[in-house]
Length: 380
Ligand code: NAD
Ligand code: MG
Image 1 (cartoon, rainbow, N blue to C red):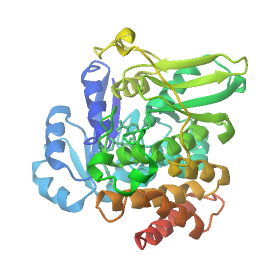
Image 2: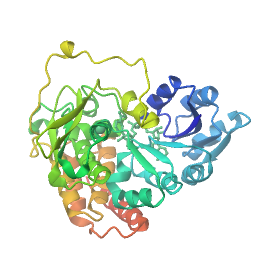
Image 3: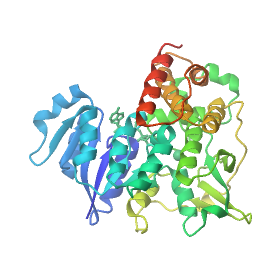
């Protein structure tokens, strides 16, 4: 039996992870569940999966359920609770399904223990890729990507030599505003931006898909996962989201991984790798899909994608500034404090204002994240 610790169990990836494990009951069990504040769903999950450790980050939410925790489960609270659970509880696989920079610290603890990290939380690699990948090597940990593009590339690279890769081709649907003019971004509403054509996801990543910052973050994530420079990472718009990404080799051959847009498949792969296990997920019916189309992304329209490439090329703490500014800007947009078109403006201002440093240690990343957030909070 493999024990799985789910960081962020009430989110879109967390819920899908539990569904995958429902189908793999003989081999996997839940060791820990952590959430921010959705205690109603958490209580249902606790009843069903009986985890040894539970963490609720929001202290008020934790107080509300402290009397309802069954014997045999321990409730920890706050950010310290997340760290302590990652450091001390018993598990084999750490499912990083929390959203945002806040996922970094607990993920680091799992890496230090040499665990398998099934990583959905791309922000962890965006802000601290250099440090995290070094710690993975030092501690014999492993990261199996859950992000569908990176899972696709990981699968295409099995049996291949990284030196023979010419480039990675990340596909992206183009999001809900793929066919809109840039002028539309002045009036785009929160509901319109949350209406993704192909994927059902949490609100932060859905807005990131509408700005295409999601693809930008994924370029940086791919850089750290596969050790290739920005020039060897291409982005191609593929509206059907059937090809999840591709690898082109030095002989010109391209390998692709295909499937329906359903995160349960990359989640299952990250849990069972190197094995593949039978499931009842819907199969891809190519004739019914009919055609797969591709085109170049418009970097002038989707400025966030360009900003992410720039930050990767600049290096050091630039991706951390990009990420922190984006998290604050997306929050402001979701709270209707700024227009959709202001998201890249705020990020650009932060990249200008906050000084980029070398990535010395984790403390410099936390400091950079704090400083950037403080600054962007003052902007409109
Ligand atoms: P979500 O918003 O649906 O869920 C986030 C989870 O994290 C929830 O359980 C929430 O309670 C918890 N959480 C949020 N903030 C927290 C905090 N400060 N402290 C503790 N817990 C906190 O997000 P999601 O869509 O499931 O995405 C999770 C991660 O996976 C993101 O990094 C996202 O980019 C990545 N990802 C998601 C998808 C997808 O299909 N949803 C696909 C690829 C990658
Ligand atoms: Mg993705």
